[in-house]
Length: 168
Image (cartoon, rainbow, N blue to C red; front, side, top):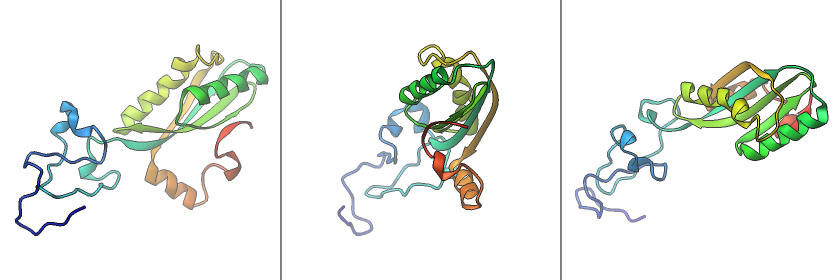
């Protein structure tokens, strides 16, 4: 990256928008919320939750709890493994014959979007992954700083279950 003295004109025009997400400025809905940078300047990434972060995707940790009629464990495990394959940000699943828990990361602009996507996950993949006809009985969505704070304080998932599909 070349350095320029203050006051010298760079190669970028005054209306150039710099974003940390490729293609972020090309979306007209987000263009109004993107910060304009002066010529030759590079904007630092804002911290999650800050005012400068409005309109930009963040990571959310999701815990989705499901339950229903007893299902053979081999079928359930195979379905959860298929869900892990279909849903790439999949992190961990734990299961028993009549309930299960899925933990994963979701990228969304705000809590409401992350929760809405999480609530659709089981239903949208029920047929493709041959999941049981269980209902969602619980949902937790927290932002990345909150998740890491919990882990640092000793709360959260055991290191033994950081990824994969495991019985309780």
